[in-house]
Image (tube, rainbow, N blue to C red; front, side, top):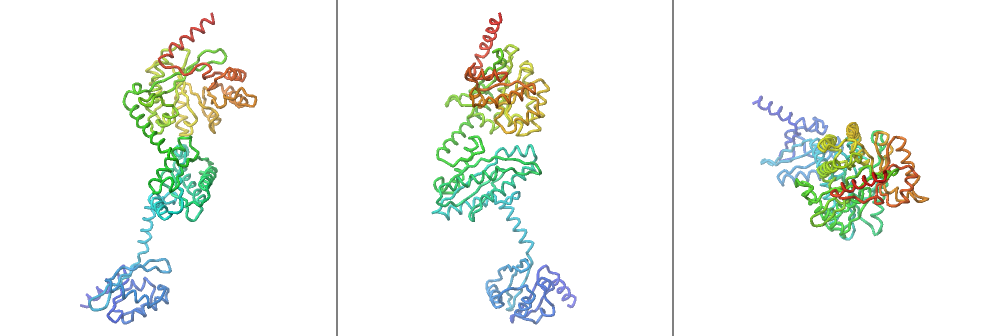
Length: 564
């Protein structure tokens, strides 16, 4: 019997919970060591025979009980009547103790005390992981949806603005600077948006990827949304330091206002999302406030993408309305045709001709440009194989094609199939190709250049880093954007800019092509400035593929007759 009592006492003292056993007179029958240690009590005071009040008074003295003792006793009595519901006690030192008082048939009760601090902290951590973005610390989509619904339900007489903010070309940062830099950028964006959303009821969240949102309750000031958008642009356009490298970013913003653009969370989100994509379609780095007409535009765009996908993936691109036209490039010195640029066209079976400005961006976003671009290259080279060998062919290449990392192989294969010399093929790229994945793109360009393929930098002067690329890759040609050609013949026009571009190209043994030449005066100005080639309606509009062979042969014959 003594051994059993000793074992029982040992088991009680080694419990992970503190334990008190009271009789019907509220006197302690058993108190284990864990209870003493839990609250830092004296075993000389808290021992069999002392009352509940004695224990509580001693706990007050030791600082583990704050508040009225009588109220504590009332709570114990109430919980005993209710069958022993758990009670969480918060201690001054930050710990949390779970107390369960269970009644016994004899009239006494058992009180267990368990330190659940680590469990509470773990639960809070799990809850935070479930509701907050681990990278930026911002609320995530789940909390955002709850907050937006709550704002709309509780703000019947108050207008609510919702901003969707998307970092433009974020993938370029990841590709060129690495994912750590990308993460650092997102944290910086989150911090700056918090500063912009500085009102008590403002709410900022990260929906995922590079997309953020701001919720704001509006006052009666009409320009408030515009001012918030301006604040966001001003903050995010400031350079961001990424591990010692200063980077500037652009963002596209879509805004919607409740109740006029939607009085429930789902509708308002859809409106803001449509507005944001309209901002991207308008050239990025801008904002749009939702208008009902945008929904029609968005639906039309989605239908166009579906039709484009069906046409491209059908296995017969040429039989589904796609074709090439060719616009000649002319030597300014002697007027001969030096090459022709292949331009992609699409005739929709119902809508008719679709502008390249419409379908090319959709093809790039959906990656359908991979199939379209390869088809265009093959068709252009097949057509060029029938031309005089003195005339080359230029083909535009999308940044998406460069990211496939198989572009060089596809170009060389297409050349082999057509029998066209690599020197007659010119690939036209914009600086977006280099911004997206600088090292990979440069490697591909060098591969093609080594094989003899000519490379031209298109739309020169419209980007922010064209000059730096001229130093890093030996382009064969610079194509001067038509925005500079429009006023090249004006006294206060762009002649000085065009001259500077031509001088840069000449110094590096590159030819220059002026795009969009439409008048004799523009041509005369370009001749004086020393430009090598021109392209535009002054000489010829784009020529159908079925007619380009005859067009070129007539020009060659005309040149031959003149020389005779």
